[in-house]
Amino acid sequence: MKNINNLLSRELLQKTEALNKIEQHLRFHLPKELADHIKVIALKHGELKIMVDSNAWASRIRYLQKEIVKSFLGDPAFHVQTLKIKVGSWQTGFTTAEPKVLSKTAQKQISESVKRISDPDLKAAFQKYIDK
Image (cartoon, rainbow, N blue to C red):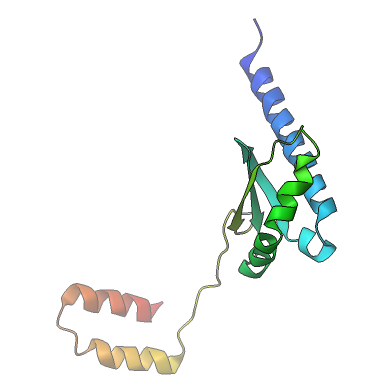
């Protein structure tokens, strides 16, 4: 009886290799400045999902969408029919913003406004925000 872990590992490795080949193909057919901002994340039922690291690059990819799909038509191994574009970071899967810090002036203004709030839960939430 075959070990299921070996089968799963082999299947996962094959899928990873296939996605890497697709990504190489895609990077070859894109302008260099654009190719550096994409990552192939999945191919399922003919839909190629790629991630780009900003909305600006996503717009550029959308503009080239038809040409990208056409580039895969010559190779039956890929079976790419449509393209789906997501914006995010392939290291984490989404982008994160640095936490915002209130200036002293903003803290003072909010504190003055909080004094006039009658709802205790809302008042507590604002106070917690100010105290951070």
